[in-house]
Amino acid sequence: MNSNLPRNRGLYFEEFDTGLKFSSAGRTVSEGDIVTFAGVSGDYNQIHTDAEFSRTTPFGQRVAHGLLGLSIASGLAMRTGVLEGTVLAFREINDWKFIKPIFIGDTISVVMEVKETKALPRIGGGSIVIAMDVKNQRNESVMKGNWTVLVASKAAVAGVGQAA
Image (cartoon, rainbow, N blue to C red):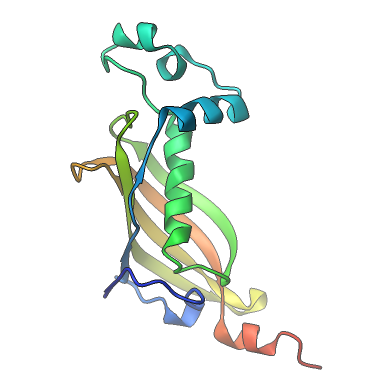
C-alpha cells in the first residue's frame, strides 16, 4: 500500500503492517536553511558556510549539514500525516548512512517502509521500525537508515478520559 493522502489523524499502532510504504512531498534546501542551521547548531564548518573554501573541496560547492538533512527528513516524514497525533516518542535512529551530499537547491523527499512492529501494551501502543530513504530530485539516495518510533494504540486513545 502506498499513501500520499492527507489525514486528520495518523495511523494507530494496529494499522501499521510490515511492508506498508509512504512517501513524502519534496522540499528544496536553501542557503538560508544552511545558515540558520549553522546558527542553531553552532556548526560553522567552512564546507557549509564558506563558498570560496567549498570550491576547493571535492564537492566544489557548499553542502548542507548532514544533521540538517536528517532534520528536514524528520519534518517531511511528519508532514505525511502518518504519525499525526498518534506518535508517542521518537526512540532510535539505527544504521544511518550519509551517502551523498545535499547541495543548496537540491529537493529532497523521504520514502518510508515499515520493517517491524512490536506491541507494547504497557505503554498503550507499540514500537515501529521504519526504513527511511532520503532521496534528491534525481531519485538518488542521499541518506538512509532505520527509525524507531512509539505509536499509540486505538484502544489506549479511546480509553483516555474514561473513568477507571
